[in-house]
Length: 100
Image: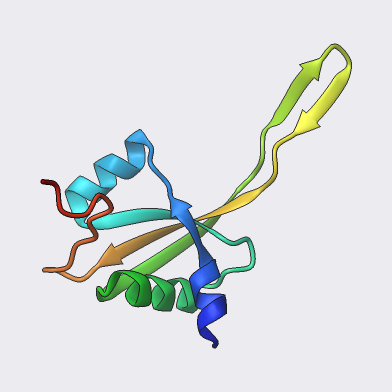
């Protein structure tokens, strides 16, 4: 697997109430990933980008919502994929970096 593919697997960290609660309680982080990403690819991408060791990866597909735009016109948000990444004890991801 080439480095370009690994660097494009993770799209962004997914921040919500649930993901924050899970991160605080069990050293688990949530990422928005590509729709065609597989678990081993997500594991390697996180290990390479953040220099940590991954214990487990869970991946799920999130269905896009249907939205009413104006009157009879209907729209739909795209489907996307989310990955829950649990790190081994002693490892942590700091998204903010050092705070001065």
